[in-house]
Image (cartoon, rainbow, N blue to C red; front, side, top):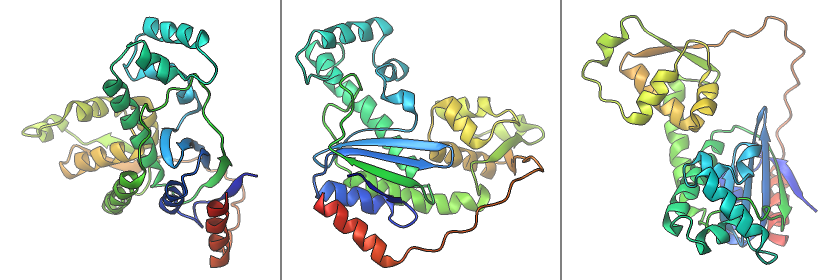
Length: 270
């Protein structure tokens, strides 16, 4: 039976810690408003984390620049001829389509950024499916990673979020260029990634939409826009919302601590 709950009552870092210490295998499904996430674990180690349904497909490797479309087709053909239980990652490594270290680096970096963005969620429904594994053609990290450093980095980013949200309270904000941005750019050194984000600012897209269009995490976008703010390149304003709004749901009462304890025991007993 699946374990269900809400991150409002049982934090992500606590959940990751228990999955790691309990050597759990399965899929963690998360949902918050219009966002989703899916994390796969094998014996407590993280195999893959995605924030979009299409990212569990093999085409992720092409989007990440790890394989060409032709190389991916070769990997798929090899997978079709392999024995049951063989994964796409194993085929790619065995056929030497890409060095194992490069595949590890690309998928690990992608997975880490996906997880870091989840620490900013104030709440979210979760469901842990015991022993659920990714499909054989889903690209997974060759060497699953420990969640210890993910927890520490995620907590650090929460601290940074505190400073950032003083100026950028929500990813629903829209960035606008100030007058004469060229004057403010004098003497400012930007990275390639910062230039790429700066070029996307159009007075219409929210920061969340910029993150989706650039493939960056919400944290990355907000951190860079925070830098643009402090150097006087842009200002942020909340995106106007439609005036007609339906009734707002009543605030849910806080769950008693005993429920959190029951969740902990459920995970340990799985």
